[in-house]
Length: 322
Image 1 (cartoon, rainbow, N blue to C red):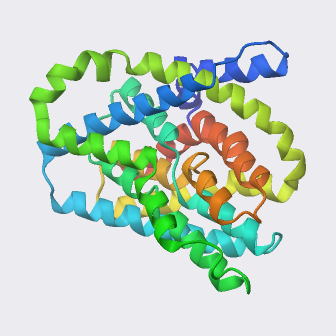
Image 2: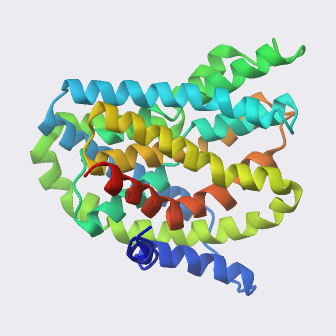
């Protein structure tokens, strides 16, 4: 693997600030981001990436390539939780296995945004409709995870309201804002982009950098939970993203995605949700242990992807897209 890709990624300011946040926890600094601020930053990032994606989708139009990509995204969001569930069942009970499987079937929007920034740094183009794939992959894993709980437990049926589950899965704040911003960007097009460009583009990298500083703080604090996850889950949290990325790249190659889109698709397949899915699992599968599915996604998979995974997946693309 080309070490320059890893160095280029690590020396990206947002990633360096992620390390700074982790270092602050390790050296016991009192650095802290007030609670409402990270929420505001995450909403801004979802709005900005969604709006830009909508504008780009309007430019490209809804082509066969777009449709194939979106179908592939939904398919991966449904299939990943199924095979990861049976792997996890080797060591865990049904509730924990289903919750973690749902977490890895869904996506991390911040990992996607970091990969987008990485591509911009390298001057590699990607299509805006990949944001639509991001939006579509958020919720299906929640539904699949709950179906698995119902199928493989005797007391799973009737523990939750399906209408409420569906509402939370498809209308949670991140999905709603992302899809809404995408639609508004699509409707307003280039004019809307020119009006909002100083806000959606000029501030974007600064906000992403500050948000990853906070993510570094949170991830480092979660590392202590890994003592409870044992070697099996730590290995799972590193190896499964690679497996999912390889499957995603194979699909991207078959569909004929360009390099930039293929990387973003691989990152979506390889990432794990640490916000939307854990929130849903806490409500619908209370018997699952949150320290397992949150710490593996946030303290292992998220840092692995933004430090090593993104350049690793791009290296694979450079090999097979020649």
